[in-house]
Length: 533
Ligand code: GLN
Image (tube, rainbow, N blue to C red; front, side, top):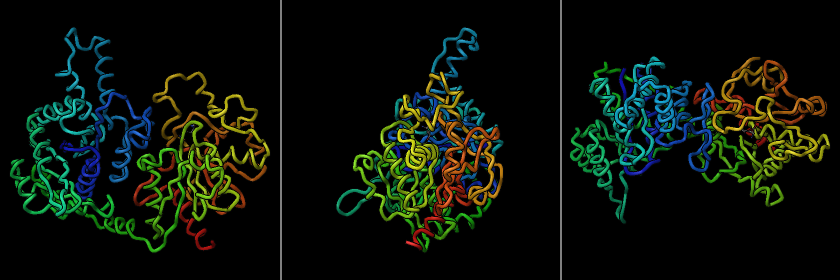
């Protein structure tokens, strides 16, 4: 087993995740079995209870774990399904250590950060790599070198090297090379400092990836190599790219796979990037264009809806179409009292969400899309609110609502899942992860080309079975249900070009060459809409 640790210096958010997933992709396309682990040095046990405004989207994996959005990047780049072992947080590590202590597993020892916590981290990394039966495990360390939170993880990097052998563990350090001054000079000092910090912890980077707006100048790359005491060719330039999907090619041009293979004693192999290059080309180009409104509550931080954004772009890449997103804050739409901000779009997407703030704005967009024959895709909350809108305005149940938003209402068309009643804890308690959905016709069947699918879930509420027959009679059909037939999973409107919604989250299984069928359907319908209007 070979481990590649990816650390970050100077600032967070400079592309450690993309560096790690691009390196992983190159090695995968060279024929190695690659997996990935993301380490998040926060005390939350998982990302499930975190506000998207702080960390972006909560990604849901097949096994139902609620994790950092970087795991979504790994699944998309490596076309794989990861499990909970692949996201290690400080909270999870401490929880395990304390549980072991309570059980008496430490046989009376004083339990400490070193060795016990550090050992728990190393065990976690090794277990994730082994259970994936990988040749190479990419390990991304969240945060920045020097943070108090990352200290035990840095120590774990050293221990992993000692246990697995130096020839099996290497470090890629991602750092920022800022461009300052009127002449736009690249500066190496922040990189020098962060490398020193790393060295002070007993870790020597093998490769440095320098993020800068432009390519690293030769003299700058040489200077970084000199200070870090590594060969010049081990300094990789990562300038701003057209899209994140171009980064693997940028690394390949600088022979990153050769450097890794040499360092880890692997047989040199040439990655085959033909298909990936074609995809990267298509995602950045596209003859046609459509505009889709995304109605959310955290639209200022685009990462809050990253899996939807990528799903729409993947669909566009297959349809030779660039998808422009019009970000609409649902509370603003609600406050304005009208739907002017939606005018001119070719499609509407209402993603998952919680709570009443902005919910009426989302209901207004579902109504607008239904009445103007504009393609609509609702996901989870967007599925539930489309039903609320239909019940209010078509069935005439004026005060229809979800009991999440109005617990006293006369018409709770969306109600709590029976198994959720009485659940008090917020963490990891929703209906989560893969569940089977049985499809019985409609556009859903055409798009999925199958009668049984498995999609990921994350919800506490569902369509109230008491209202199903009334709703269906008026033309909103449930073409996807769970195996028991009792739980509604997909709805579609008759006599509408594309009005689809799902209780599950199709965005989490979307892959570059295999976009979510429902997002694909939305973009396709948006192209038609544009032709007609
Ligand atoms: N708040 C809704 C529920 O809990 C929808 C959840 C979601 O959109 N992920 O059922």
